[in-house]
Amino acid sequence: EIPSAHRIIISGTPLQNNLKELWALFNFCCPELLGDKKWFKDKYETPILRGNDKNASDRDKRVGSAIAKELRDHIQPYFLRRLKSEVFNQDTEKTTAKLSQKREIIVWLRLTNIQRHLYEAFLKSEIVLSA
Image (tube, rainbow, N blue to C red; front, side):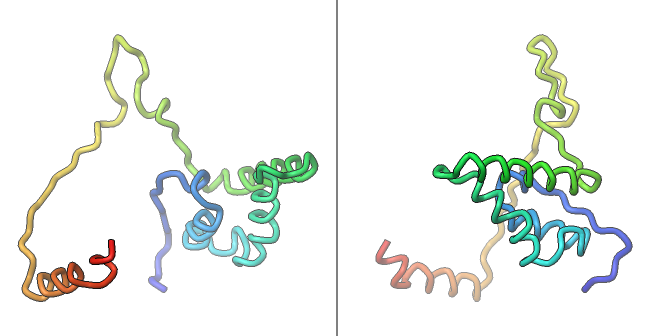
């Protein structure tokens, strides 16, 4: 509901992770591009998953593969995909990265009184004690 002229999402591997997640990401960025959730499930998700099933028939595999290609072609203009091999130089003599290595900064903060109280209550909860 936040008004914006442009929406951009930076994500890890939505194609490999989950088709529902892919739909949700595109539904945020490009509403209506992949239809509503039910239409997307009927048109793309169900046939692709059926084709990927270990017991899929040859026909289901062909249909799933064709639908997956159709989906890739449909989203391609809106999707920038970069592989690690494209981002980092794989030459063993040159280790110059096109992008800098990931940096992590750890900042330690003290819990507030309410956070400490909630944390201690969680540690004493039945689910934690049973684990």
